[in-house]
Amino acid sequence: MPISYRQKEGDLTILGSETELNGKLQFSGNLVITGKFTGSIESTGSLVVEKTGVCTVDKIKADSITVAGQVEGDMYAKTKLEMFSGSKIIGDVETSRLRIDEKVNFHGQVKMSDEVPDVDIFSVSVSEYKRMVSQRALAEEEDDT
Image 1 (cartoon, helix red, strand yellow):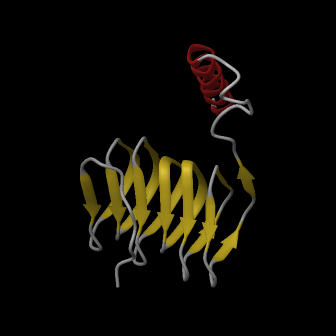
Image 2: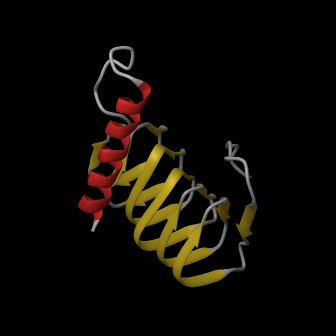
């Protein structure tokens, strides 16, 4: 039975249950994995690993990640990461919003990240706020390399 989730606007790609893919996957839309994937994933969109999906990765980096199947490897979700009941996750996760259902098999560490600098947005100009957000994003990119 498929899980219910929200996707970002944009294209939707589905790796079917009979699909086995190895390598580096980069995309900007929405991806649903119901088959097997091995490698690394980098995206500005959303990723869903359905109940039948199995991912063995070095790292997954996406705007949002929803897991109902199995993931072995580290995950970074910019806006949110959800682990549905029955999922199995082995690896460290980092996100600004985390949801873990009951009956999730999770082995790893969690790091909660901030989306924006801790500042009163009403006390600074728009241009100053944008500059601070940009600087923080650049610093995080440097930390990842």
